Amino acid sequence: MGLKGFAEGGIASIVAGASTHPLDLIKVRMQLQGESHVPNPSVQVYRPALAMNSPAIGHPRVGPISIGVRIIQSEGVAAFFSGVSATILRQTLYSTTRMGLYDILKNKWTDKETENLPLTSKIVAGLIAGGVGAAVGNPADVAMVRMQADGRLPIDQRRNYKSVIDALGQMTKQEGVGSLWRGSALTVNRAVIVTASQLATYDQIKEMIVEKGVMSEGIRTHVTASFSAGFVAAVASNPIDVIKTRVMNMKVAPRAVPPYSGALDCALKTVRAEGPMSLYKGFIPTISRQRPFTVVLFVTLEQVRKLLKDFLLRR
Image (cartoon, rainbow, N blue to C red; front, side, top):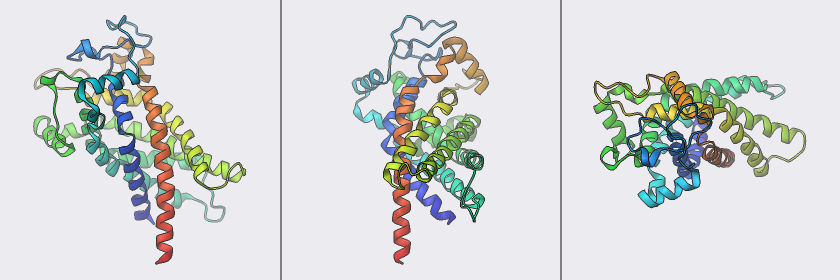
């Protein structure tokens, strides 16, 4: 039962991650807007939200569509899939673990007589599964962020990773093994929030829809529940996601002081320079990506479950 849950979750996550990768790339580029240490400010500085003290004020606001157009003009259409190999590895490690572990905990804690699991138990299962999955998948997450963000740097300062394996190899060689877990505390925190809100919300809403007779079990119910779960996950996780992206992407030269000493320092510098709403930078592409990702994830998951069930019954 346990291995089946890991396989189902892994397949669904890889399909969802690869299909929504371009939206995730735009989200990362937006979250890196306004950083004061960016080496190419003429290209990268954008108007901040409610900034307290920022030299970026006065620059025109650049949204997801404008960033998408700029990527096509300067890097080509293929750039939308920069880092897709890292996304696939990340989903293989992180999402396979969290989906499988959540399924195990959910089945273990469900009351065998009533077949009911309280919302609080679903949330706790999501917290545990998300934390474990994030710790496993952090190296791929760091590589993915860097590969997605590389095109925004001047040509002579780009990392130019050829693949996720090359990225992990270069990071280990140049920055040490510890760099593979840079921002891991943020990754775990984000994953805990995303998994708890996403999986628990999906299961809870799906059960309510079916129990109240609004819709019967089927693809319409799956789409409705996953659409709602994607919104909840996006709202809950965006602030941590912004900080995680910046910490993972920062360049640390030998014997130089890093731009951020940690997550809290990054959060304080970001809010001080760009305003509190800067923690919701990239929210439009985040929700534009999170909703389709969640819908594809759960619809695919339900279909894979059905196919595997039918296959096992035939045997």
